[in-house]
Image 1 (cartoon, rainbow, N blue to C red):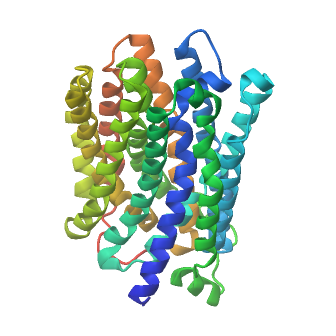
Image 2 (tube, rainbow, N blue to C red; image 1 turned 135 degrees about the vertical axis):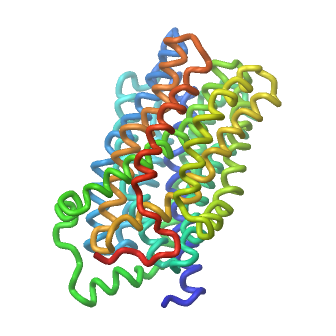
Length: 425
């Protein structure tokens, strides 16, 4: 059994590295409005925004390729080495975006280069969650796996929060012209030193006891993708279904909302960023609490409660936001956030436990990223499209309601894993 100090160091390092990588990935979403004008100029702001979110969605579409590369890699060479590669690639691509010229300077080369670098980001992040969640879960004790695993999602949201907070500060304190000219570059360039810190921490990690045992017994999977899709495809489908409403909720709240507040509800850009920052802050407080609760009452009750919560509360939340007042905006986004907390607090413990050690990285990576590519990456684009086509600011609420009800099926089909040993075979 791993001693507590080693376990704490391993999970903390994985969490900080995860926060760094998701900071890199989230910046684009928070700057979507600004980047739309810089790289996809148009007389119609909605067209620029849709083009910007299309590039955002493209990065998600390539994530399954990253999952098929890094997931098996983590099952072949180890979780630690795979995670070190992903953070290096991600930080490099993010830093490079900060150096790109805009459309006014480089013409069509600018949006093409932006899309290419977003694809590199998507490829790298395709291996992040599967490797990091597997790493954290394999170090955690059975009885407290929910609590320990929840810190990984805490780190991911902290990365989103750091990106949101920095963009909010820049938006509030920089004139619009300065933000368009150079201010948008600052969050991307900060990825360089942040990535170096994350890489250093990951290079210092020792691989998990579970993977080291596979190596010692010469049982490391030779064809993890084939093994996963042949013998564990049902659990891959359950993973996709659970991640479906998790990803749509996350990217609706943390990525779509800034543009929804500023472009649809006509709040100031700075106020929009601060509202999303408040949602992220509530998530970081609630996620560990949900993880602890899941160790006591089980994972499935919390996942069911979240799905029913969205089904009942999504419409009232958007109604509150439609009032346009700051109390209404804040109440609405926090109501949605309360529905998201039980999901993010439990899924990191749920998904790796679906698969045996030999293919755990592969199974989680494929299921998680295929679902994110189909549902999460398209959520801001689809929500923006629905509002634009219907003319209703309530349209995203009906989408959330429908998805949450569908998600009840895989949640109810999933095994209860709280307090039980991880699968070996």
